Image (cartoon, rainbow, N blue to C red; front, top):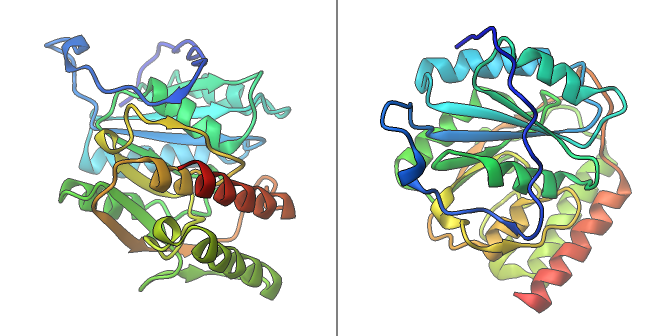
Length: 266
């Protein structure tokens, strides 16, 4: 859906990282109910914003027209990603934009986006176009069947990576094995615990105080949420076409720290 009116920037939530329970009483009788709130955390992704917004909109309009929202949460990118997105809010009525100036990090950006979300289903996808967008409909279908959490995985049937180096493959698998040693009851529930592409039923996470570390929000969701049914959907991780890669050794260190925090505080 298109509109000629720009939306104002969302107010950044403060305080605890806790997703609120959806209050159906606040929904106006004549307003369209939001089914899916998809958060897109960004940092220096201005090149990819026009493409991902166009493609996601076309895709979701075929399945749940007028019943979804896209929430871009940008960490005050120097390339003004948030401004590029905000200018596009004139075209996409389902788009909402948040610019954070005092907080940093993908995981907390996702939760802040969920805190302002209106949907019964909460999702996250990267802005770098490395997550195939058509997988969104597969994730949504599994949630509609009753799953609490649906994870896009590189390590199940129809999953994989397009052109990773041996070093990156080793680090990814090594991180998973470490997780199985430190926190087997959490990490062992999925084949791809470092995935940043998933959907969750709001009821499974609402009201739980989250304390994510670094870039990997899925482990926090698995560790803190009330999740019974988990489903995985295979996808092939694509190579980045624009923007800068955020993958560094620091991500793996933060992942290990996060596992240890969950192990001793859960």
